[in-house]
Amino acid sequence: MRVKHLFIPDIEIVMTAIRSQGPGGQNVNKVATAIHLKFDITSSTLPVTLKKRLLSSNDQRVSKEGVFVVKSQQSRSQLKNKEIALSRLNTFIAQALVSRKLRKKTRPSKASQQKRMNTKTKRGQLKKARQNPEE
Image (cartoon, rainbow, N blue to C red; front, side, top):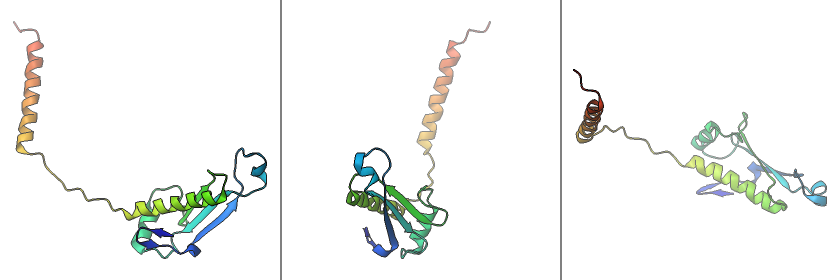
């Protein structure tokens, strides 16, 4: 499997066919069309930095042992469910590859500060004008 510029050997991905849940007629009790995909992040050949990102993500699909688990049963076809499960793994790893841009600390300009203060004083004067005149 390829993820952008990374290659994951098929040996590292374990897919098992299981019976789907829900309605499906006569087919549901006979054919195992759902796919249970397991990918062990800790023992994979991915770079160490990527492994750390994947393990530190707050994703429910990653177990405490570091195994990514996906169950796909959207389609009646086992082949389509395999493709869906692999695409979910692909997007999970691709999201970890994207590094967030560091935020630069900025300060408001003098002009914007002055403008803010002017609007505050104008608003205050407007409210003061609404009050009853003191005797």
